[in-house]
Length: 399
Ligand code: ATP
Ligand code: MG
Image (cartoon, rainbow, N blue to C red; front, side, top):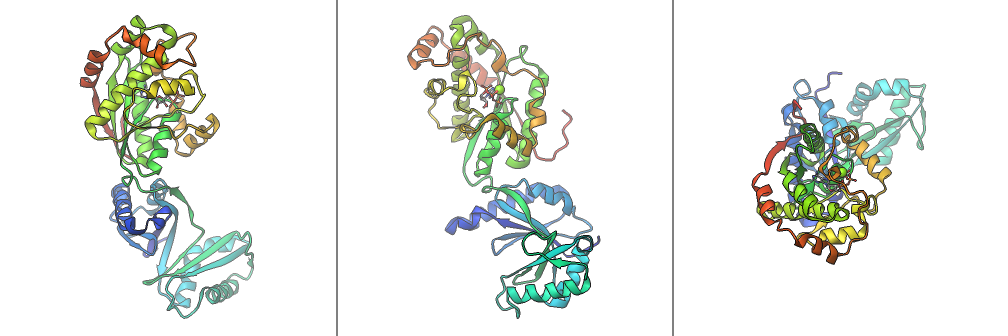
């Protein structure tokens, strides 16, 4: 359908509660939306009455794809494709039939919802609903009104500048705009949990960079490609992601040669944390994020986490901590990372795994086990060997 007054209405969620900070939150949201839609046409953006209006010339802008992308922008609670028209009943009625006529033709029942933000409009919401409902019934006499569960809901919003007609809004991603809560470093493996954890932090406004530990030749190039694919995928929610890759082989071999087998994993995780936080310090990231969930595996018992965290000078956020695997998987489906995460490539965590890992290591025994070897030179070497790559949303990658 050709329609020149198309507009996407993005309704703010928590942003509405932000009081004095609100305009800076809005500015960040608009910047994020602008970046996400840049390749889809020359849209214009304006923010009024708790709503972001995304407008553009219908023949030059891909509204359908824009709608899909906007569903992945944090800070938007609900969104809908709408059509604007003059603020009078005749125009509203003909816009309804032009825009929603096909659905009304096919449906059995409908209702009208009216919102009058412009209090100067000559009908109040109830009157507008009754008037428009009557006119729709005249045009489509096969319909009945069903206020509880209608097949089609016709929404009319009377705002300051125009009237807007649309169907039921769909859910947005919620949360607050990425870039309003500081920066954190996500420890990104190729698994299911860490991409979910990173996306959950982005939902709370955090800018996420990622770090991945590789141990060639024990881990393959394909395993790293999988991690890049995951970073590119979650960038649709998180915005562009810088991915740091750390050569970790020598440290893992040193652990294998110098530490008791039952503590391999916990010591390895402490070394990962140490490297991660030195990178955070160098780049000004305020926290580390992991995909751990308590009790999920031997290295994720409370005792193991205490032993890991004792090397940390920065907060470690674990947004999946209280979720079941099933709940984490549900989110991974939603953000579309599941199919990538289950590709069968090895992770450095599965190299040299002990047969019987200690589930309740004490800090003292872990420190004693580490003390026979000076890891610091190897940590510095690993940091010097870090490579970085930036993954951007909706870019075509030749992985
Ligand atoms: P995931 O599904 O996220 O891989 P997991 O259940 O496999 O988690 P572990 O392998 O014990 O759990 O890893 C726990 C957390 O440690 C991961 O969620 C991730 O944050 C981090 N991690 C594991 N391996 C790596 C790696 N190679 N590089 C960076 N971080 C890693
Ligand atoms: Mg893993």
